[in-house]
Image 1: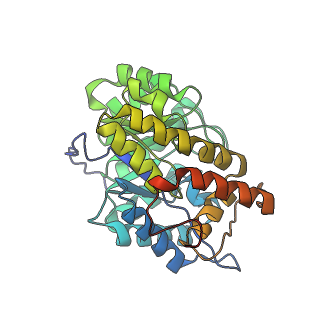
Image 2: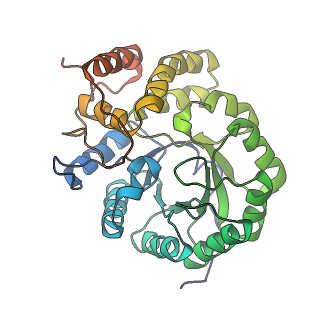
Image 3: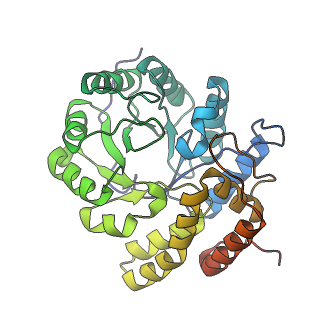
Length: 317
């Protein structure tokens, strides 16, 4: 495996803002819909996102074969390269798998990689460190350490994250989405020191406003509300917090609805907005939206419509 590292020259503005997790569209027979994936990328770019992330949890990465996840990453990088930063998720059950995905990300021109600790079963401290050391040895791309809860994730302490940032040459970024993410962000930044370039949030951006005073540099939500998330972040960057709060009040009910229905809600919104042809998913454990839920979804979208790209309306003109 490659072991040469470069000193990361990414400034603090490169990985900043709304980095959306690109969902994976499927056809009626649950094959990957490559046309739909490219359409999803066009929507993200038209929305002005500050970065795109492939093959992460909201991409249903755990339900893709190795060949499929490589293909998804290739399409995302191909569509977005040179237009916005690209981050490829390389999380897997074991370091050998994650290292292989990290090497592949480098060959296709990704700008960074992101990884959780070993998934599927909880890992110990030594196993986590060995996991990230192997990924770091396999690729000198900037490495985002993803600290998540649920979906087989092992939660890392702020102390462990700070150690990894200071021990690994390319681990300069963190995605924090465990319990009390705002306070965790502050703890991580204090412990990690200057080697840490930035901490991004997760949880669809629901906790973004609380995270801001703790020094968050952006958030990584799923992509169906990309334009609204971007409007929110741009208002924050413009220091127009009254406007940002008004956008957030419209967005939050949609994020709560997403928390209830998960991936099916993401797909239903994308279908309603003409981004993908069918609201199909592979991830288990979800219920489909019924007609009442779809009506509520459209009503909630009405509330955020003024912040949405008119090229992607949620209701027919």
